Image (tube, rainbow, N blue to C red; front, side, top):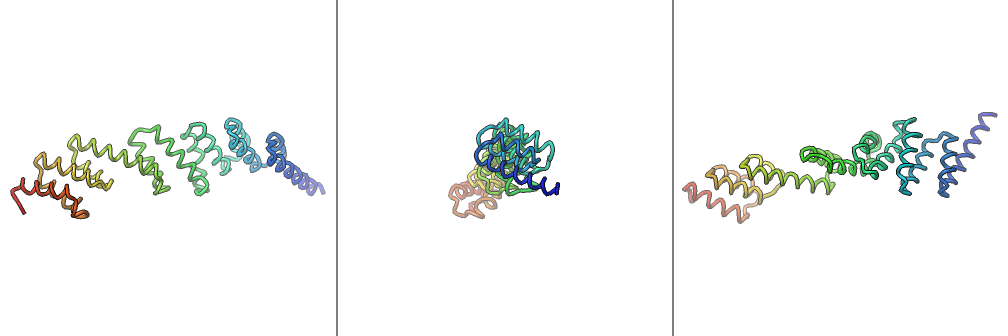
Length: 231
């Protein structure tokens, strides 16, 4: 009889907690969920606080009353990650979102990507590139990561070309599928007298796929003349 009475009391308190939550009476809902020791209910209160913009209160509730007791509570981890993101702390957010992503990738993916994009803004260029690669491993079409990665590679290619590191510049422009950049490399090779390398690059990297590329054809003509081979 006692067990049944206890269960009935739990159900009544849960009903009261749900009603309080619906009416935005968060203090009452919080006390009732504490009484019945319901971490999912506590998490729903934290969600309400998050949606109202009360980040400090949400973080305190999540940390002290859910995650300290149940560190693997996925929905609490996910929400904590979102709170930390809102507070401008992508590094701490990742510590919550990465384990949540392992368990529930669909729910955690948007926040995880947002945290990684935030982290990238604080990193060196080399580390940023790795972070964008990681994002694209999760979501290959993520437009911000694609664009930012492309900008970094473009800058690296231009820098390599300026210091006559033609091999690096060529590889980067090939990765970018940047025919203009590849013709720029060929032009530099031609200007330093390396006609053979320029010809090989133009034929294999540009004209093979774009035989009508006017600038590449004109440059190839100049290269062949330089080599005294009008053919």
